[in-house]
Image (cartoon, rainbow, N blue to C red; front, side, top):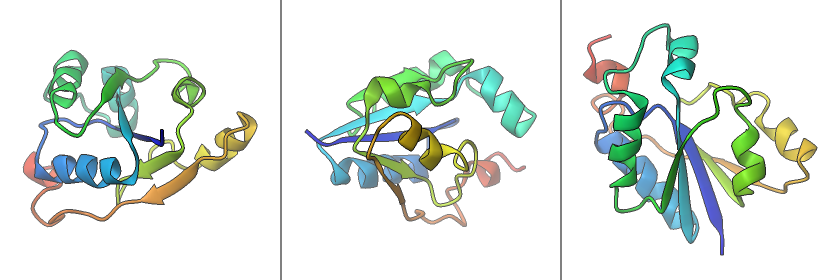
Length: 134
């Protein structure tokens, strides 16, 4: 079974997120999604998400292409790699948080995980920051 892992905030779930899940799911047999904690979102974006981490997790969990969804760690952001042991990690086209050490962490954990960047879905419309008016 080929496991695919994605991670992100997924605030105000929209068609861009759904396309991201769909693209990732097509790459493997099981899609695991890590939803960022509120604390982590604040650290990265300097603002809290519209929906709480529990609400975002519930929304993501209900998506048809998502097989499992978890909240991220409040301490070690890479801990989930050891737990899930993904075959593939799919990144959003503009995803930068926690990406710079990703390949290094995979090697450190003895994982031979492929990292792929996925294509945007109408990024001029379906981008969370644009939808929030930021």
